[in-house]
Length: 383
Image (cartoon, rainbow, N blue to C red; front, side):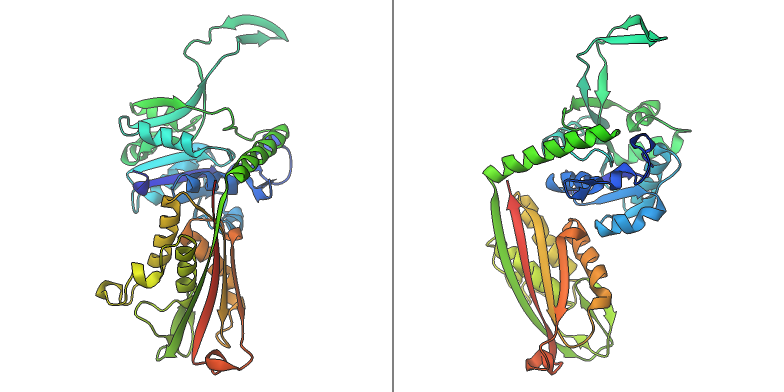
């Protein structure tokens, strides 16, 4: 059921307990923002439809990570409600709601939540309390609190989408988490097994622990890592028209590129690079030009299919590099938008995508402006 599951990353807080400066979800952790790690956890679990609730002033940060966003509210509940209302325009069957400051959720933890949703309207990971509990006052222990049946709540918390949307619409005020909102609406919420590593970064000291955990994971991956690289090349000629598509971005131009689909030469080369890394043939094998259904098709369909095939085989897209070869149009003004668009199609961070251009110094068919060529390289990692 992961194909019709959406993910909400809640990241509109200011992280006041962390101290002054940048909010914790945007601080760097092992070379990437905390929120990038949170998003990567779900992509590793095969979930590509991710939206984040943020403060509008953080929009450039979210876009740099290739994350669609909505403006969060003054409270956590308001932020989740805003994201749910956005998803309601094209509702998924299920939704996972996750703290953007939890960068270490594992695919196994996510899978347990999804599995529980087969039988319950809600599910959330938690850890049973093992330490003794005290109530204290004036620096002294006053009461011993029984710990039986008490759990430490974690995220992602998963729900049937229509049920949690209705619950949030009916809820007034703030809530500690979405389970509280669900219970108030009478939903059935199952407890799934949480993980000690699934920490929420609240204080500075927790960053050091998270760095160590990520380093250990990377070391363990390196022992069994499967790394593959694929190359792609494509060419399309110019013809009549007043605009063209390059790397998923529409650009006004005095001529258009000609092809069976929308002739996006950059996406075609990158798609072939992914297929090459997977040893899965080329774009013509998967989307033959003899098939009328692909005439005029948007090329993001092809790239999304290739990225999905990589995920289905257990590979993460570590890096993608596209070089466009042409005299005109000028690529520089559009390169960042291309990176963001390609990242969104593949479900990865924009920091993992490179788009650049070169001319052929007036030589050959590109130099004569008869068409555009593209080279692409993609690196896949499993382990």
